[in-house]
Amino acid sequence: MSDQLLISTRKGLFSARRTTRGVWDLDAVSFLGDNVSLAMADPRDGAWYVALDHGHFGAKLHRSRDRGATWTEIGVPAYPTPPEGHVEKDFLGREIPWRLMRFWSLAPGAASQPGLLWAGTIPGGLFWSEDHGDTWNLVEPLWHMPERRKWAGGGADAPGIHSICVDPRNPARVAVAISSGGVWITEDLGKTWTPFTKGMRADYAPPELVEAPESQDPHRMVQCAGAPDAYWIQHHNGIFRSTDNARTWTEITDVKPSVFGFPVVVHPKDPDTAWFVPAIKDERRIPAEGKVVVNRTRDGGRTFETLHRGLPQAWAYDLVYRHALDLDATGERLAFGSTTGSVWISENAGDDWITLAEHLPPVHAVLFV
Amino acid sequence: MPRVAFTRNLQRHVACPPCQVGGVTVRDSLDEAFALYPRARGYVLDEHGALRQHMAVFVDGEPVLDRRALGDPVSATAEILVMQALSGG
Image (cartoon, rainbow over all chains, first blue to last red; front, top):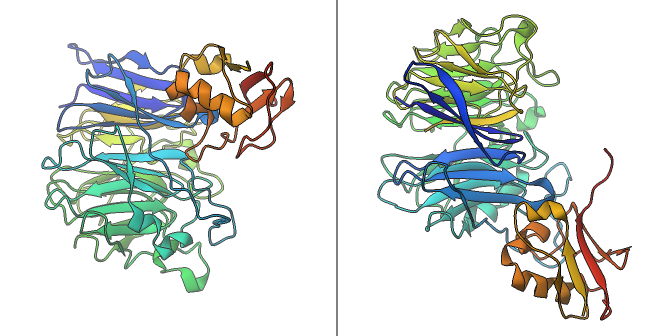
């Protein structure tokens, strides 16, 4: 059971703890006033990492080895210098700078790879570090892959890697999801990359491109730790599931109140159990009917329960971003945070929710630690 | 000697008080300042050495327009201000 939650917001990294009385309270803030993109806790050595987006001053990384008591700024990835005169554009003709714009995912390597970290960034570079983030290297084969030029901005102006799944059976197999650019997997620690989007559909694309790997806009991808052949994706087009190690994907369409959304989490042991936070898609991006709900399936997507006890059911317009839903290692505790600064926690797999906060800055990410 | 001063807002992240430096171009002078305050470099310049998009440099009140090479000349008495390119409310 995790008794602490890190909340990455537009104006700082907040911590909440469960007290001995069983009540959750905010108890600390770091980087107050700074834009915190996301946090990551490394289970191998207990280190915490936080990605900041300073705007004027660029994207930065900090590491804590004492659970947030003190932080040290560490290195950041550098994009390569483009060839002289090279101006890169996405497939819609918009310029893509070869410059670190934002961190959009951080992931630890396997237990057998101490110090190895992965970082997914906007505008689409994947980086790895062998020294706990002090120095970073671009995964060049992915960046220089011709198909990468077909990626485009989705959740941001430029394409970005928001999900990194290191296979627990084989740490040389790493899956990344790009908004917007599909799912790409390496099985040789980054040397070669293959699209894994068979079965995905992008009905927002021209007919000729509906099934193209690069057209796919996964908003978030997760892999079941205890049954790693199972992946779930909350896609722009809806919910997709794979039970064959991402070789094929099945679209799940009949989901009320909406099949659209950003985040997904999967139970750590049960691949059939996953949670989503639905929203009305595209131009609106608000909860359906002003009601904040969480969808849960326990049968691999055949049916969904819409969970609402303890969540606002009128005049609520909380949007939940792709990293702003988390599940603890037991699969019992869930938390999510919204663009309007609310955070809710459940201790019974989503059946009931308590309000942790209502007036935080916009929440980018939550993380049980 | 040219004098380099960084925006106060940067001090919250990296201590970099005003400093006297050498150099005959903006690039030279900033390089000397960054030698004193290595962490400040990544806050002001991107990974290719260009001025970050929302940063601005003024030399004796004139904005530096060569944001990539930073090749503008500086006099021995130049005041080089490194600021945020703030606009609007």
